[in-house]
Length: 105
Image (cartoon, rainbow, N blue to C red; front, top):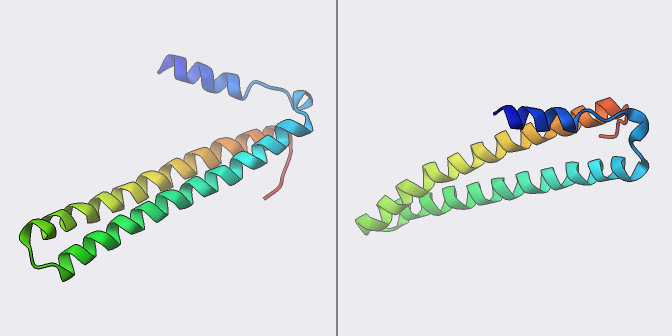
């Protein structure tokens, strides 16, 4: 915990003058990568939820229905985890841009 806090402080310990255009553009690329990753989490969550719902609704075998009932909450959990990770990374990146006084949304 202490080491993680120390690493986090090191990330934000840079000065505005030390950033060059390459660093700012890398931050923009990271914003876009964060959005792509979030969309991948959503795609996976929706696939699991739809598959689980289909198993429950359209299949008569009990074991397949049980698998479907397991897939639905698993898909919801993946969606929630993806959303939390997206928000955390977005907040961290906004801190960097705010320190650099570099605004592009």
